[in-house]
Each structure stands twice: as C-alpha cells, then as structure tokens.
Length: 295
Image (cartoon, rainbow, N blue to C red; front, side):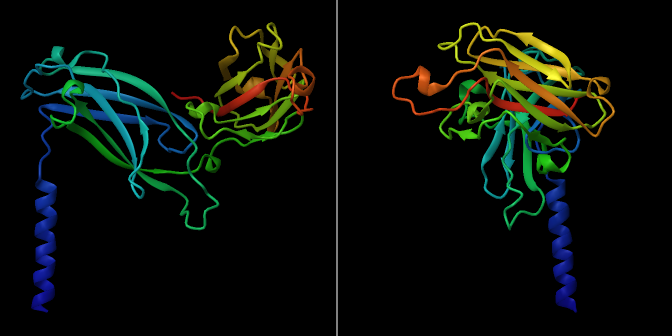
C-alpha cells in the first residue's frame, strides 16, 4: 500500500514539474484560430494569427520568419509546411502591440480510410513559432504555439463528388513536383460531375489544362446545372478558377450538376505520330474542390 502511495505521489510530482516548466516566448503571445474548426484532409484551411507583445517584450534586433509545421505524430513526417514572413517585420515590433493577419493553406489527401489499422482520424502536431533564417540550425527557434489536431478523411463531412458521364479514366504521375498535378482525368467534349448539395454558400475551385499545341484557342465552359458559370479561352496551357457558389445556384435538390464543356476535342492517335491513344480528349482536369466557404 505504501509503495502504491509513493508511486502515486511521484507521478503527481512529475506531472506538476512538467506542467510548471515554462517555455520562453520572449514576451510574445500567439493566438491561432483554424477555420473550419473540424479539420479534414483535402481541405483549404484558413489560419488567423494574432501576435501580441507583452510589457516584458524586449525589441528584436533581427527579422524572424514564422514557421508553421504540421507533423504526423506516428510517422514523424512533415505533412505541411507554411513558413512565411509576417505582415510586419519583427524588428519593428514594440511592446503592447498586436499584429493580426490570415493565411490559407491546403491539406492534401493523405488518409487511407480503407486501411485496416485506420482509426477514423490521424493525430497531427501543429507547431508555430519564430526562427532566424540567416542562422538556421545555429539559433534555437522561438516556439509560440503547439497543438494536437485530429484530422479526419474529407469523406466524413465534404460534399460527395461523383464523376459521372463524359470522363476518361484517372491517370497518375507520382513524380510530378506539384501535388495538384499528380493525378488528372481527361474530359470528352462534355463531362458532368454530380455533387451533393450542402445548401450553403460554397467555394468551387477547378484546376485544369488544355493542349495549346493542338488547339491554341480552345474554349472552356463551366455550368452549374444549366446556368452558365463562365466561358473563357485559357491564356496558358494550365488554368485555375475559383468561384463562390450560392445555394440559389445549386437549387433545391439533394444534388446538382457541374458541367464542363469544350468546343474542340482531339484523338491523340490522329495528332501525334506513334501514338496509339484513340480516346476523345477535351480538357485535362487535375482538381475539383467543393467545400463550404471559409469565413
């Protein structure tokens, strides 16, 4: 009994010793807000930063960068890095000052919900602070914020997107340097996505491409149901478009249609010598993102 009591006292002592250990913030307090609060993969995440300098803050004699690191707890891998320069140089910060700004980053799809060991989420450690780029590795960073986040698969709460008619099969290039261009589908002259209707204002992002070598003036048309969203000729081979879609545009049904059309299509076997590809190709669509609009 005495041994159990001694062990309990030791654990409590160690706990309070750990909790009382102070991290030197050098007089800077950081508040961070994530939107949406429920974080999934395949998500644009808004991060609001509020840096507050306290009365004991001593003016920095250098300009620090902000590091923002998302670490996978189990594998110890860096998932996302959004290091950046704050909106006001740190050498200009004064006591009792507040510096506020927001940034948006993208959490890629990385969870495998069909893995037998998957528990419905993955724990990720978010670490934020200041570091001196010029003396990286020599000077310790100033850690201002740490938080454990459980990231769920997008399918848990994102509107479902079904690639219906007019699509060729999924293609993948694992060596592509840009994560947005590692997989794609070619459309035919007309392609349709059926999207679950959340009946809330949403953001639609489409990243695609056209073959400028085949058609210098190929036209792209996007429609929501039968209403024109935009019609344009891309300036470059790759294009990206972002739209705010209102509940009125989506209609009252449980689903709505995103229609992607082009005025020109080609068959590679008829255009490129040595090609055996007999598919009808219109547009190359790398990424369709549809989620509730960030505040």
